[in-house]
Structure formats: C-alpha cells, structure tokens
Amino acid sequence: MRFDRENGVVTSKYTVIAGGVGAARFLRGLAAAVDPSSITAVVNTGDDGWINGLWVSPDLDTVTYTVSGAIDTERGWGLGDESWRVMESVGRYASVRPDGSSAANTWFNLGDRDLATHLYRTARLREGASLSAITDEIRRAWELSLRIVPMCDQPVATLVDIVDTDGTERRVSFQEYFVQRRHGVPVRDVHFDGAADAIPTFLPDIDSADAVVIAPSNPIVSIGPIRALAGVDAALSARRNSVVAISPIIAGAALKGPADRMLIELGHEASVVGVARLYAPICSTLVIDQRDTDSVARVEAEGLRCVVADTIMSSLDVARALALTTISAVA
Ligand code: GDP
Ligand code: CA
Image (cartoon, rainbow, N blue to C red):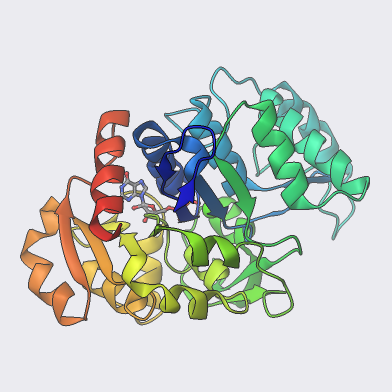
C-alpha cells in the first residue's frame, strides 16, 4: 500500500512474476485495470543469450512490446509491421562460417525493426550499464509507466538436457531447444546455470506488494529460473496469503508451447492439479479456467483456494477482467 502525498489517495502495489507471452497479455490487462505505475513486472531472463553478436532478452521484449500494443499478435513475439531484410542478408555468410562458430545464425529470427532494441541493449551493456538500467531505458522509450525489471543483472542460462533427433543425449541452451529444435525433442532435465550466484533484484517488491501474481507462464522454464534465485521461494512463502497464480495449463494442455509435455517429461501432472502442486508452497490461490471447473476440489485438496475464471486472454477485455479477478482474490 502506498500513500500518495499529492492526492492523498492510497494506492495498492502489484508485483507480477512473468515469463513471455501469457504474462505479457496478463500485464496488458492489469495495466488497463489499475494505475500502471503501481505495477512491477519481474521478468525471466533465463532465455537470454547472444544471437549474431547481440544480447537478446526475449521475455523482456515480449512484455515491453505487448504492453505497448506493438507486438505482432499473430506470432506472439517481435514487432508488428516487421520486415526481414537483415536476416535474409545474414544467410549469405552461413556457407563460410567455420565449424563451431555461432555467427550467421539463421534459425533465430530477428526482424529489422526489432533489431533496434537488441542493438541498443548490446551497446549499453558494452558501456557497462546493468540490464536493469537498460530495461528501464527501453521501457521509457516505449512510454510505459509500469516498472519492468529483469529477475537479476547477472547472466543466468536455462539449459535443457534433451534426447536429440539423432538419439544422443545433449545439454543445449534454451533457444537451441525451443527455437532451433522447435521444442520437438524429449526433455530429461532443466538447469539454471548461474542462478545460485545471481542476486534477485526484486525481493523488496515481493515484501511490499498488496498482491503478488504468478502469471500464466511455463512453470518449469519461465517461472522456474526466477524461483531458482536465492531467497525468492522464501520471500514468496512468507507472503503466501497474498500470492495468486493463474494456471498456464487449461484442460490438460498448454495454449501454445511445450509446457504440458515438459511437465509430464519431468514427472509432474499436466493439469491444474499439477500446477497447484508446484505452486502450493509459495502461493495461496490458483485461478483456473472455466473449462477446468471439475478440478476445483482436487486443487483445493492441494491446499490452495481455487478461483474459476475465463483465462484465455484472446482480447484486452478478457485480460482486464482476468486481472481484476486475480488481484481481488488476494488483495
Ligand atoms: P514464452 O511466451 O515462450 O516465454 O512462454 P511463457 O512461459 O510465457 O508461456 C507459455 C505458457 O503460457 C503456455 O503454457 C500457455 O498455455 C500459457 N499462456 C499463454 N497465453 C495464455 C492465456 O491467455 N491464458 C492462459 N491461462 N495461459 C496462457
Ligand atoms: Ca520465454
């Protein structure tokens, strides 16, 4: 809760633990429902990495572009009204790239307009600026008033142990799994390299929030890296009554991406009950989709309160209504 000196009004504070697309849609709805300056989005950076010499932070950019209304809504990533001339030109160099080099990457698409963001971020990193400071500069350039913070300023890499298409077991970066192999290979394990030594930037935002929302994001590879940072699960469980999650799994499936398969491959249940089990230690309330109404009792048996809502954010109206239902469940 904040007391505003000028207006004498009391405003609430909301902290949202976020991955990419699902979280970004939720944040856009929340920013339409409450004063955006009362929102802090804490965003996964485990997907980040070097692509063609540029530091790319996919989930941060998905949040920024979506809340701005500039996202390509069809793809769910990158900017609308995009062109791909640079990517086409990069292809020329693929034939001369030496073995072992990651130059002339042609499998991770970066649009011409989108490239400006990666050029800016990389230039600022090379000047020694922190990812937090740079992210805030990018937010200001897009004229957003919600706070967007990377989960930490140190690099943390999500690594995925896969069984590759040739049958060999391999440890690859998240993007080599997700984009290069189109998440079409079995996953044996997931690691968050660097998480043990990284410093979470946002513990005070968990302590001071009226409501902490775990957005509908992949529990393993989007929320997982944030939870892997020192002190985060402890801070969340200390505020458990104020923490609410939205299930990214609807009727046993992910809307998009590998979350459902990954849950099963790693020994969890791909259902709202599986999500409830993963979040029960840190979260008091789970918002599930109306298609899962049958599962309310099983969610409650895991020790969570259960709220049923329309959670498929196909429009800003649905996202705004979901945001209001979610925060009122714990605030
Ligand atoms: P990323 O976008 O690839 O970074 O992946 P995320 O971790 O953000 O999100 C993937 C998960 O979000 C999938 O399990 C989706 O089912 C879920 N998701 C995406 N959009 C929505 C939505 O509108 N509602 C709900 N409930 N889940 C969603
Ligand atoms: Ca992501």
